[in-house]
Length: 408
Image (cartoon, rainbow, N blue to C red):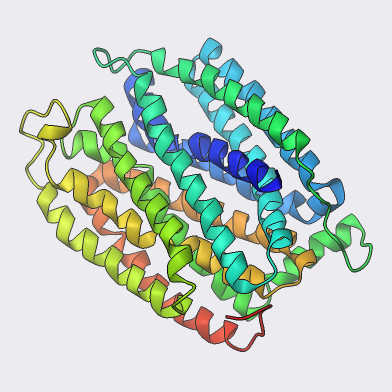
């Protein structure tokens, strides 16, 4: 029951969080705003995650994982229910701020619960990849759910906002599942004050291993969100796909991420994580170098369906297959090296720097996209990929001196 509650919570937030790429495209269509302005949605989502995580992550064990998750779900249910009736870009910003706030509460709780349910590094990594894989299945569902509410004959129609009534109902169902789940509080070695718990989280960031880790996380999310948030717009403006098809075909990116994370759990039982992640990074660079040249001069052709789409529309999203295992594996290696009572504050740091990376990636990509085009914006992802190879080396070297729980 606990795993089910964790899984469905992550599934719901996968739809909400990763709808930002679709909402960016539809906001440009429906509210007639610029790409740089639309890119601020990522900031409202991710900075809310970062701020809330930074302020409350260390105190969530005291409040209780279940209560934190219930508060987050209730906030999002109300925001989703109000969105279609208000139907304004300013409230879309409010909605994503609420989603970010709620996800901060839920993610810190979920990661800590995973620590409770696993006793070895391998078990932790396997469960982490499974939960993250379910998250990607939620992302996949989201593209099709949102596409189903878009008017194919009028890109500017606000009918797509009605999807939030459905999402409000789904969040409400999730709230009931979490309320019924027997989620246990964390076992702490000693009682600490709120201020002490907060500064314990800050002290973690001073460790060399943690510094290298959070920079690696920052780079990874910068890449993923820079591509994921702008792929629907890339499909429409660079590849010339209709709006519905642009969103639907982006689901290949989610499928690739889901497959990559679900299969990584099995691969990691037979292979060390460090060479595996280096292979993944090399694969990411290869996909971009092979697929982006195929996106040149294709927008002039008439495209009405998937069958008419250029090969680049199918190849570019496959970068998700290569990048998929990196985030959960890095998190798992880091969390497995810590005692359980430090999982919540460490997850707070993970969420903060993930959020900052996501905001940076989306905003930078949006500005470059607007200034010089989508192909150049996507080519620049090769820079953080190369930087991640470097930080991964230092992370491996620093982590090798630790003795994580259980067998490697």
